Each structure stands twice: as C-alpha cells, then as structure tokens.
Image (cartoon, rainbow, N blue to C red; front, side, top):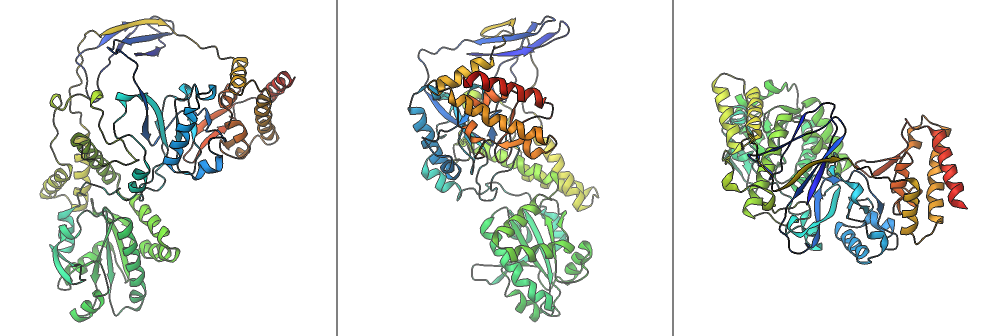
Length: 567
C-alpha cells in the first residue's frame, strides 16, 4: 500500500511527512529535500498480507464525491424508480448491477445518492470525497441527505455497516438524542422561582423543581395570558395544538411552555390552567410574573416569548411569536415543525456549538462501549485499527453539561449578569472541549517502508482515448458518441443565444434531456475534458458551462467531433 503527495516548490525546502493513527500524533517524522522542479513524494508501506482481502461497501454519511461517472442503467432500475426508491432498494439494484460482471461496471467503485435523487455511480476519478454542506433532508424525522457508498477492504468497513430493510424501517423511530441539555438552571430558577406547576398523567397539577420541569428542553416559551382576556381565550386553543404537535415531533430536545398568569384571583387561574397541558408559574408568585413581564417587555396579553434554554437569550419576541404560531397552526403540522426549526436556527452560535460537542461526545462513548444501535444513518462501531488505543490517550472525563453549570455559577458569583454568564460559560466550555488531548510534538525517526522523491506522472487522457473508452463500454456503438455530442452541442447553442442567462448554463444531471448523457458511462468525463464543469448541489449534481469558456470555440470543437464520428 501507499500514497503519493505532489509538492511544487520554488526553493529547496524540507517537506515533512508523517504517517500515523487517527487521533494520535506519532513521535517520529521523516523529512525530504525537494528540488526546484515539480516533484511528488511516493510513500510505500510494508504490509504483511498473505492473500487478497474481501471488499465491502462502506457508508459515508453526508458525503459526496467530487464528480460522478454515470447513473445506474435504465435496464437495472428506471430513472423514475430510482428517484422514488428507498436506500435498501437502491442497494439491491446496485448489487444486481455489479453482479453482471460486464465491461461497463469494471471501473465502478461505488455509488452516491440521496432521497429523491438517482443512483450515481462513481469511479476512481470521483475522489476526493467531501462533506455535503446542505442540511439533512428532514432533520427532525432523522432522514439523511447525501450518502456515498464505496468499496474498501473488509477490515476497513465496520461490522454493522450494512443496509437492511429492518434497519431503515426502524431508523426514523430511534433518532432520539441521547445526551442531556445543559439548561441554564440558575437563570430559570431566578426568573420563574424554584418550582413550577406541571400536569401529571392524570392532568392533575403538581409542583416540580424548575430544573426538572424544564429538563432536556431546547427552547422555553413563556405564555403571558389570562382567562378574562378575550383574545387570550381565542389564542390558547391554537397554542395547545402547537404544543401537542411539537411534543409528538420532538418529545426530547424540543420546546417547553410555561403559562405566566395575569388572572385576577386563584379561582380564575385554576379554571383557566385546567385546560392547558403545559407547565405554569404558580399563581402565588405574582411578583415573579410581574418581573418576567418587565424583563421581556410584555406590554399586553396574550404574549409569547421564546428563549434559548442554554443561555436564556430571546429567540422569538412577543411582537413576532404570536403571529408566527397563529399562521403555522392555520397551515398544519408541517408548518408547525418548520417554525420550530426556524426558531432553533436563531439560537446563539455558542449554544449550537455546545450541543454539537455533546452529540459528538455521546457518539464516541457509544462507539467505545458498543452500546450504539444499528441504523442506516451512521457507522456505529469505531474503527479501532485506525485509532490509537484508549490507554495511550489522555482521558477527558469532564462532563460538558456539568462544566457549563460550574462555569455559569462562577461567573454569576463574580457579578456577571445571568444571560451574559450563560453565554460566556458555554463559550469557555466549548473552547476547553476543543483542546487537543495528545501531544503534538514530533521527533525524527524512520518509516517501515520507503519514502522517495520522484517525477510527477501526468496521465495523457486525450479526447480520442475517451471516445474509444465510451465505444468499448457500449459494445462499439458509435451512435452513442453522436447522441452525447449532439445533446451537449444543443446546450452550448442555447448559451450562445443568451450568454448572460444562468438558466441556460446550469442543468441537473437527472433532468430528462441531460440524462441522455448521464446514463452513458464515460460521457461526463468526456464533457469535462471538453470544457463543461460538474459540481454538487444540495438537491443534485449539476453540469455547467462556465462563464470563462469561449462559446464560439467550444461550438466549433463539437462541430468537428460530430463530423469526425458521424462518418
């Protein structure tokens, strides 16, 4: 095994190179002197393998190749079926294609896809992979976005990296976060008191510590209302509907509501609160209710204030949240989920960063203990052969949630305002979590294998060679070449008519017309050589005619090729 690293230098500098395990900085390095000319460094690693290793498909989540080769043939699975198929169905179709053993699949090393997208085949030109920047298809339901599957030797593929029908059917029901939200306990205790009224299974109000009543919630909404208020009585049923929908969608790490009463007496409060399923500030805490109104600038009722549970910062003000809830309830459950996700995007970046760290820590713990459940959305087993042993690592046993609370208390004790203290505590804890756990020192040493300078090899992929390759993949049928070039030429002609219109320059690989090209192996590589560019978007892979291209020259090239291969 081994790899090659290109290095272009303008002076005789040392190039330092090391090979080691993930999460570990080896205490050795090897150095090479590079010349003024363009060089590459070739590294060969000695492996003791007596027989070839079996290859299996490895899943890469939210990952896309730099380019695709073609799509799964129509004879295996029609395009419209690919767009509607599940991951399990797409895997079965891909396996059937690879079992054919013909010349078309000899260079295929895997595929990439997502919901509502074709099965795009990939080859060695598809590296390097990169992370898909778009969000998941449906973050709340747990559906994944782009996934790439590629062949690797069996030891490099986790044992549980398999797609089965049972996994997929259960994955959407098991995507429940497994870490606790470090809510700002002291802030909410100061705002709402030490206890809140909550409804038990029999809908009977009981007192509960504020920290427990708000435990594991991502957002806290304060509802200022009263029975004597006509608009309040009209809005409350909508808010109850909103709350119940979110409890189904996000039972954990969701939203918790707290009713803050402006009723005139205890009797009115009890009668009005009896219809509500959420928590409430006890009526006896009238002073805290007035204080909360003052803090959030509530000038009338009904009013709804949404705050981040980690920092106490306002996410949705009274001026906008009531209107947003009313509109969402009119549009249905999907709109309610969309509004909730929109609120989550408004929380302070420090809170988001802290939750990302907690989620990652949880995944690492599960991977180390083998407690993770099998789903289609992640490789749950850690590749221990790639990572340094736990006993060699410096342990980080600090609970991030506990650390945030500790820092928050220290900052408040120093006189910092609670909101600012919560934000600063999250920021400091985030920085601490990101500190490296191992030494970064390197000591000069040797590598078990070879490391040498060599000239850079440039592969001579001419147009004729690519055309010949496409003919071979299509049993010598030159009509495929003519069809590919003719279709591409029409796109070039459209751009020449209106060069400034981006609609003519960019086209999805799966659209009905361009699919005549996409469905033929080798055609995308040919078009890229002729000046087209292929890139990935959240929804699909896209072919483009760049602004820098000389359209007249490109048109002439296609004319010449069509003349040559039509004869």
